[in-house]
Image 1 (cartoon, rainbow, N blue to C red):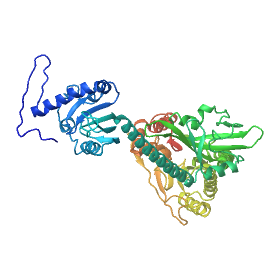
Image 2 (cartoon, helix red, strand yellow):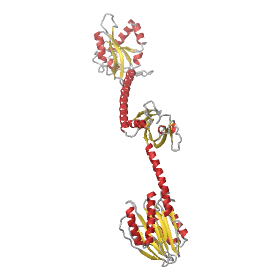
Image 3 (cartoon, rainbow, N blue to C red):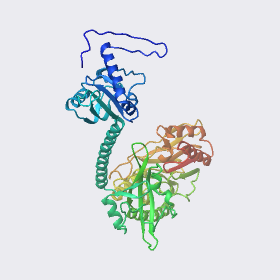
Image 4 (tube, rainbow, N blue to C red):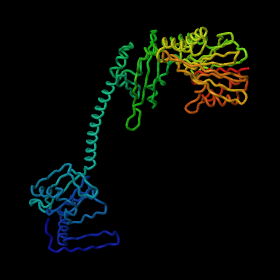
Length: 566
């Protein structure tokens, strides 16, 4: 930069009209530049007109890189309040011009005497940030056509938006390529996961078209008679359109009610069983489908995944099991009819009332029973028993227990001997997981004595007439069929007029749940308070109380027998 004097004068003139400040440095240099600019305008009258009408910025500088002039397009690059004064050094016009490379480019153009072109030139001297430019530095002879180049013109066009758009587009391309690679990796991972799952899996897009499936699915459809199904990007739905898919009522399922369609609406479908049959075939295929929606990072449903299982064999096996069960149940019901006491003998000097209520699942035949039969001139056998288990097996052993005891009691009625023989017989034929609890007594109508033995059964209850005291009759031995050779003892109670004996199974006292059960204490309280009621009312009252504790329906079979001395 040309030295324009050792002293610097600063003058600031303020004009009231426009409040524009003008800073003058080196008055002599400015006067010289203005004079030269005036000469230029006189010698080159078309230059100023040209500069102000071209669409790109033009900045005219002298050989010392001081401002001679600038056109309107160039001034638009700056803040509207900026001043462009003749003689202003380029360092003040363009901050960082030297370190950004502008000054060297201008010097080279002047020194070489030829234009220097730049493309996508980066300049970060403006307050608005980094900008990019295309242009040329062109040496100019203004004062003499034959003399040296005494000026240089900067002709520039801002391309910042183009460069930034190009960079952004390149970034987008890199990002898109990265995303595509990530998507491909994720797709490969998904396919690997799908393939590794042993359950047949199918993946659908939002148009219900199959986009992926694993080998298990291919094997499933091949074994079911659909070797060409499924096919990626060419099949839709779970089965070919010629196949009718029906629910358990044989109603054809509409397309919009299919699991995949429901999952595309956001629903997770579990254990949907459907029956398929070809229109020209009597064969049937039963499948179970579990499906769920596939959701992207924005929460949008993009497809669905479905697990399809062929449960035809299981369904057929279940149907066969049901048929066998119904057959066994019918036999068990017939057996139960033989051991439930519907036609019991009357007992001289006594009255009795019984009740039997099946559990909630009445289809499962239980092992509770009571029995009364004559074993002598003045003696009657009284039995209350509970055989472990349900169903046909329990019914068989219940009938066996009833009639073996009858046979032994008729031979030798004494309770301890009859139960010992019964225990050994049942231990020899019952499976290890089964046992019997049983209370067996002999009621003598002449002596009015009740002699009993209790094989692990619920305590019979004795209520005395008058004050209504209630006591428990004890257990005298372990349950039957637990161990061969078990011994039992007998106990006896004498019954007076109005005395009451109540025998029952655990379905009565266990009615309820947790600590809130009817229980033996509540049963005893009920007998104390209502023991003088008619037997039929008393028995119904006990059963009703048990049902109330059980929430209306008993969880286990309940048998009850009440005997009163007259």
